[in-house]
Amino acid sequence: VLLLGDTGLPDLNGRDPVLNMVARQIAAFGPRLTVVFLGDNVYPRGLPAPGHRLREISEARLRAQLDVFAGFPGKLVYLSGNHDWNRGKSDGYEYVARQETFIQAYTGRTDVFLPAGGCPGPATLPLADGLHLLAVNTQWWVQRGFRPAGAAHGCEARNEAHFYELFEDALAALRGQRVLVVGHHPLYSNAMHGGRFTPKHHLFPLTSVHKRLYVPLPVAGSLYPLYRRVFGAYEDMSHPWYRPLRRRMLAILKNHGNIVYAAGHDHNLQYFHRHGSHFIVSGAGSKTAYVHKGGKASFTHAHRGGFRLDLYTNGAWWLRVFEPTDETGTTVEVFRKAVS
Image (tube, rainbow, N blue to C red):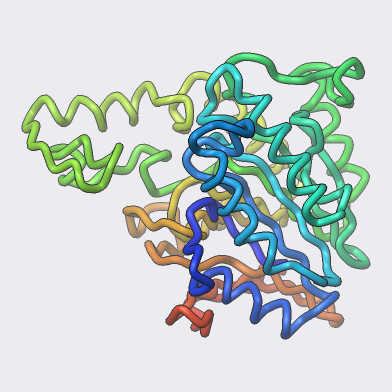
């Protein structure tokens, strides 16, 4: 299972290192491979309506990804992230619905976008004997404006409390099997969404918005990282809408153990082993950003690439990190960990 997040800004000249890495994985593994995109599939706002000034470039960014899968015999899964929901704005549902329809039509696959319909999930997908994927729409919790829920909108979960019941039931039904839980937002992170900032962010806080905005704001600039760490923007772990989701998900996963939870959101590669389960951040599909070393993390790297989860016929289960070394997609393995 190849896990890639935040792929929404690919090179459009056929020389994107990560997409060419995916093409090489497809050639190597064929129908045995599942590829999961962990959200933020189109920067900056997801897929706007036809006629919008960003529609052409946004569609091109999606097509660049999807063209890699022409004739692909394996499983393909797309999740949505905050950028796919128009950066969490009140009309975000319209954006993510358009993206789902576009991906389904372009690939000819009806089960490619999970959870379907902008619902919170969970959505279960068997990947192999004894291995199941459980998809959660984490953006649903922090989304402003309309959020579909209940049978009237094609969702099984009626509300947040009902989702947690369904999530626990799904894990209970899969007890004793391998479970990969995927969502856009991480449950652990040593990067900005987890409240980690560099001295540069304190002196030049506008670089958090755009990497070239080197406007010095000493002292006053430290207020921005402090706010992000304590109160949080909508997309941060410290935000009051994000915090309860993280707390409840961690409590549920702790009761089951040896679960792999994969997310994107932060633009780097991270691995945490906590309370018997494995937590990864694989958000370096098209961008990279600062990540703090150490702490609770066993591995961190600010480099484009992704995680791959390998299940062997003898029952061994391994996590690996692959990073492209050039534009042809040639890779180097930089981290591995047995998870069983």
